[in-house]
Image 1 (cartoon, one colour):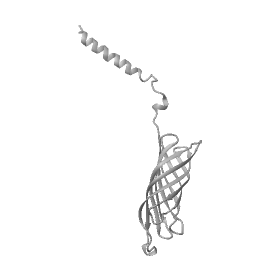
Image 2: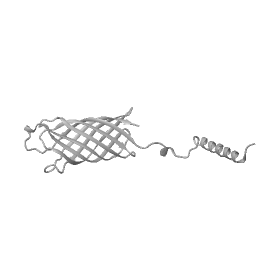
Image 3: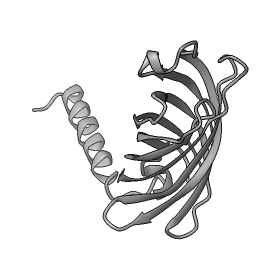
Image 4: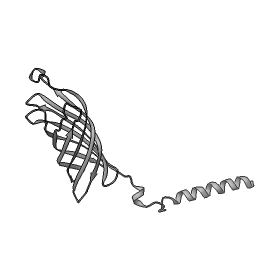
Length: 187
């Protein structure tokens, strides 16, 4: 009753369905390569800057995001808004991104980073700072810190230090920024 062409087609479809149903019990790929790579964390904190332009420290807030491609290599992006407490009415805000190296040991994750971006020197009260530079400039920084992983996706940024260089501002600006904070780790 069946023609040989139709029988051949049904046999091909049946064989293909059988093979596809076996893929769920097969182990054709090793588990580490079958799982996703990378981890993401985003957080914020309190920052203290030694501005190297005024005589008093300035304070503000920071936001950061880290994406680690491997257990040791990743990228970090930071925004330092150091403009909340400015005794000399000078603020230094930075927007940076760059690579980072992480060495994980249990719950502790010390890291080093090299970043580049823009630094914005803001004169909040021009009458208090006549003749001072202001504006947005290229900047880069070297830094590092310590993250402590705690349960339930929380990361404590126990310490983050950046030694910044703003080479195009006057004779060059060299502030140091310290940050403490917390982040949420997405898995």
